[in-house]
Image 1 (tube, helix red, strand yellow):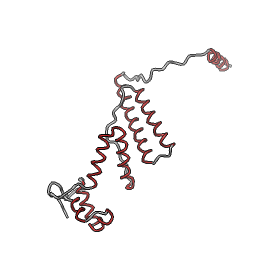
Image 2: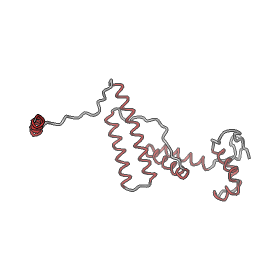
Image 3: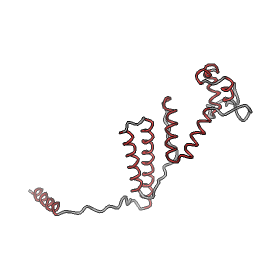
Image 4: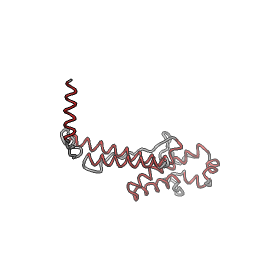
Length: 192
C-alpha cells in the first residue's frame, strides 16, 4: 500500500509512519497489538491530501494534546510535555532535548545565578523525595536550561561591561581586631 508515501527517504508525517507500520507488521498483527480494526488502521495510514476518508491517527492526537498542554500550561506545561514525550521515548532509548534557545529571564548575572540555584534546589528536592526518574529528569533539564540562560546573560554582561562582570553587590567582611592580631602573629612566625 503506497498512499503517496515518498519513494526515497524516511517517513516524516504521521500517516506515513502508520503506512510504514503496515508494511513492517502487516495489518492483522498491527490490529492485534493496537486493538484497532483493520479498516481504521488503513484510514490512519492514508494521505489526507489524497483521500477523503483519511482520519487523524494516534500520533496526530498525541501531538495535539501535548501542544495544548504547552500552550495553556505555561512553563509547568512545558515540563509536563517533556515528561510525556520522554515517557514515550524512553523504551526506545531516546531522550527529548529542548531546542528552544536559552533566553535569560532576568537582566543581571546575579539574578540568573539565583535562578540556577533555585532550579538546582528543585532538582535536589525531587531526588531526595525519590521521585520517578522522568520527573527528576525534567528537573535536571530545567537546571540545564537555567545554566544555559546564565551563560548567555553572563556572556552578554561580560561583553557589554568591557570584560568585567559586576556579579553581585556584596559588602566586604568587616575586619575584626582579633583577625588583625592573628595576621600579625602569623607574620612574626613566618619571619622566624
